Amino acid sequence: MLVVENDIGDREALTRGLRRNGHTVDNAKTSTEALAQYRNVDMVLLDLELPDLDGLEVCRIIRSGCDVPIIAVTARGSELDRVLGFQAGVDDYVVKPYGFRELLARMEAVMRRARPAAPPATANSVRGISHGPLTIDTGSREVELGGQRIDLTRKEFDLLLLLASQPDSVVPRRQIMHEVWGDSWSRRTVDTHVSSLRSKLGGSAWILTVRGVGFRIGHA
Image (cartoon, rainbow, N blue to C red):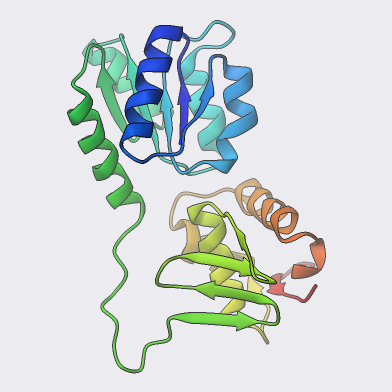
């Protein structure tokens, strides 16, 4: 989780509270720091009053290439402020001062929407996929490569699972867009996630580009 907060007191208090509740927390006090860290977290708590760039613009930049859940945590409390926040791409909007338990509840609600429950398991259901040294656990949504865990974002996991579930096929770009992103995507979004996956898996050989068609899973 990434806490983006300009006020040092608010940032430290929020970080302590989140860590006491079992969250792993990174911090940023400027938009520059936030934009350098957001790709590796599961949620962003975003103050809109930042010293170097307005928080709404930070939200738009994040949203243009990533669907990580974003909750605005801000002193801007007018109806117009809320509308602008949702238009910029926040998933929820919390106005200071707020109750910490309410914030935790809102975070849980946003994560439930971001990660729909898996369908009930059946006797014939497959929990995981193995592809050489790569293993994907569909139940826990965990990925290991050579026995080492690889931390992926939600969409990186969904993309890798889609490719690995069709190991002998080229998955068309349009199918990837539809199944992973639904109606909210751009060509750059797919390419950005493919690039990030290749980096985390240690090489481009794991995801091969078939020019003019799409992508397929490869081997190290």
